[in-house]
Length: 117
Image (tube, rainbow, N blue to C red):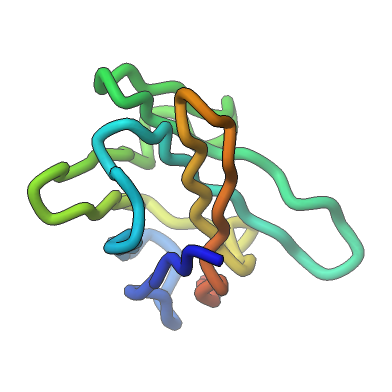
């Protein structure tokens, strides 16, 4: 099982910023679509942003204009820059790698983001 390693979560005040990172050393990173999901207790994991192997991005409406997903293929890492954070952004954030050819999926272990009001 390929393991993705997330980092960058923490506690921040409303209006603040955090940058999450997800390293994926065990996959052919450049051939994977990368995505960030988040999950709160009792709710389903929800997709908030993704970036294709070609660099095309898409965002959930709730984070458009505040979050930016990017990737560095040389470092095999995907990032999520989160600005203007709100208490409702509090969640565990997960990254997902999906191989464009095999559809094989690999999840990270999750990183907690807590936004205080």
